[in-house]
Image (tube, rainbow, N blue to C red; front, side, top):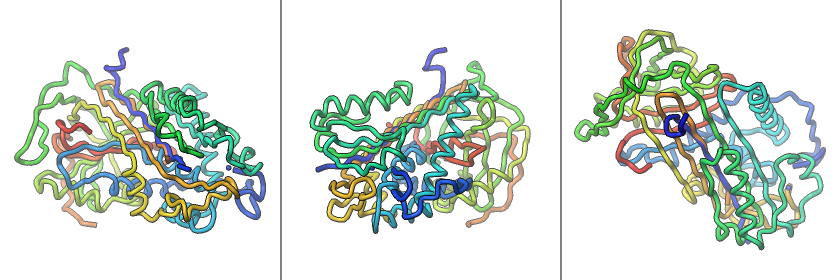
Length: 417
């Protein structure tokens, strides 16, 4: 099977400093690592939805958007483990976490969940990996290596070519080569710390679309502006729902194995852009999970564009996080990352997030990487058709963990992103 024939997703994020977690009493004064993990991931969902609103000018019709909130959440959580004082408080509020020990338990539980699935030869592929790169000159607390057992790496940022090569190799391996370059030597030449996350997903539809049924059809950017696009189509029994609170129809397209699905949120287009904007403004984790739980199986004819998206977000990510309430982490005068090192002057001065997606008849492949350098509508009848011929929101969702892995908006077939 050619890659061009398969849909895909991948993502990377990096947070870098410009100029270590721990055995007991390194995270807190009483690190009880025996507490049960938190199974409620609604906080991650709310963080991702808030960040989506800050990053994407959703009231614009000129662009699409795609990213992995889970990748960015992981990179920021690495920073949270090393934080203290006001920096820690800001991260706790925005990430919606309540303590380092509890968060570490949840972190490791999710890591174990995904590792076990892949070891059992899951019907889909989801790779997620984190790295905390510290310069050789940084005096790390000894306990950092005991907690960041698989994430910690020592590099010499005074040799930026070699350091960038190591980071990029990690990202490329995790994303199956879909993001071969995340950072450049110039970007890390003055770094003392790079916190990186990479994620990759590949899945085939449980009910595949037949390429012979894909035909050109109209996609309406607005009521006045439209384009002809390759539209995939099939008829079958799919889980469908209506969220009166969000003002949209929702369709589930499960991947083989049904542990992960794509959910498409399609607002009515009769009101043009208002329907999409109101849905985005209203959406939160509680309403989203409620909508997914209140769906029913029905016979419906599905029409979805075949498309690719690529996205790069750099320091817009820092600005978005500033607006959400994280400021000290990015300010060298106020950043407190003393859990990593009580003596090093650590802060985050650069951020990079890259993501890409391909949707085709057979399924989805995606990757991303991150670096830190109710309005109500009358309940409509179930449609005979679910036709995505106007702006829609979509999420790649882990049904078991109730976690958004990737999300995006498709609004303009002619947009570059």
